[in-house]
Length: 115
Length: 115
Image (cartoon, rainbow over all chains, first blue to last red; front, side, top):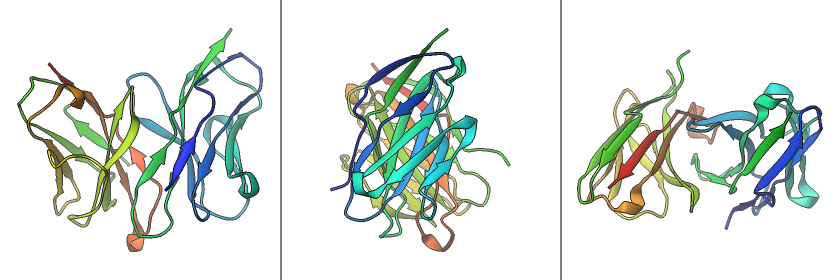
């Protein structure tokens, strides 16, 4: 069965520091991979996605993620965090087969940013 | 292009009642998926509709149902509400050209509180 693990429930970083949020997935083949961000009381905003091709993908707000097939990982990175990046981040996988749009989400990582 | 809209944004109901939530997808999107988000269970897939047909269903009881109209707007219904149904209900739409899985764009959600 598909699953997504985000090992870090909470992460605190200082403004201007670099950030890496971890995501590991379990899936029989290469899935579609996504990172979403959620601010309090809001819906999910797509940061970036991986479907195929270049394993380093660029997203909005200066985020990037790297797909590593050998490690079943899709970690999210940002070189310099801004206070406005404080939010909850979700990694998700989607199946390539079946024609369905069903996402399996990780439990999320809550990011706090210190000034 | 307008994003995904959900109405109402907030609802308060009592146990045993039923509720209907509405979702209007991005113009041109044919797939609508619904998710439940709770602090304990996280984000869980409810079901997906594509061209007025339920294409996939998550592991929820039959009290949870939905439908999609010819204009792709979707509704979900929860009957005989239980306290545990209190959650943020998120709707997502995707283009799904050719019926293939695709990027999902989320609405702001409906916050349901069951008393």
